[in-house]
Length: 274
Image 1 (cartoon, helix red, strand yellow):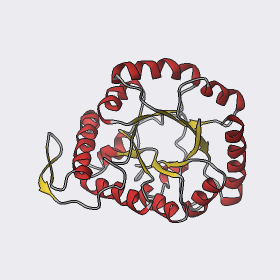
Image 2 (cartoon, rainbow, N blue to C red; image 1 turned 180 degrees about the vertical axis):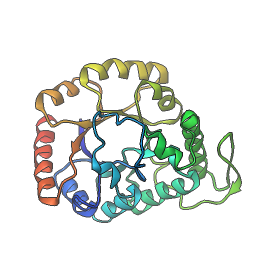
Image 3 (tube, rainbow, N blue to C red; image 1 turned 120 degrees about the vertical axis):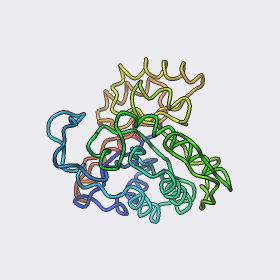
Image 4 (cartoon, rainbow, N blue to C red; image 1 turned 90 degrees about the vertical axis):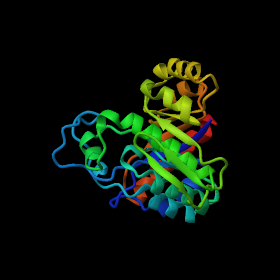
């Protein structure tokens, strides 16, 4: 079992350089960070977690800038988006950002992706929430063409470009691993486009049957990373009985001293259950 960290990096918490260095020093294997470009003031979409939307959603740093900063002071940890909102992102620019992160990190980028829940946010990017699933699928396919072809082109319903040159290419071949987030509705996306499933805060008793169903749909042994795990020994113990590759502890967004205390406890738990 591998152990990493999932968090929101904002202007009010620990800096990405200090966070990346601290994670690596404690023997954890990865840093996954969330993305929101903005939060509309007049929002009708309910927060999936229930209640008021936490302020951290308003204040996230750009994930590729933050992860590049962490890459510059680390050598080993994986650097992932958890998750990048592909429905709100230009595929050519995003392909370049992912490949650039992979290059400057020496092949440590992980591209965690999802379709998003905040309809007003995506509408401000010109995305129709009703077709965002098909849009994400096309953009991911287009990005794979850009990463793997010297002269890439794509012609679809939402993405359309004639042959182009686009560098850098990723260090990892054929491209950084795609971790697809979401529940059962995303299983066909995982099967068709993903390298792994990023299961978002799914309790162990629900996760086992879902893993079986996903692998039945995919026809292969899809690796699973669980996002947002609480540091509770009884919960971690249950996950260790499942065929899961990695657990991502949820790290609250705090100043540096408080963050380091959390990371110390995560490292202790990881050592116990490895």
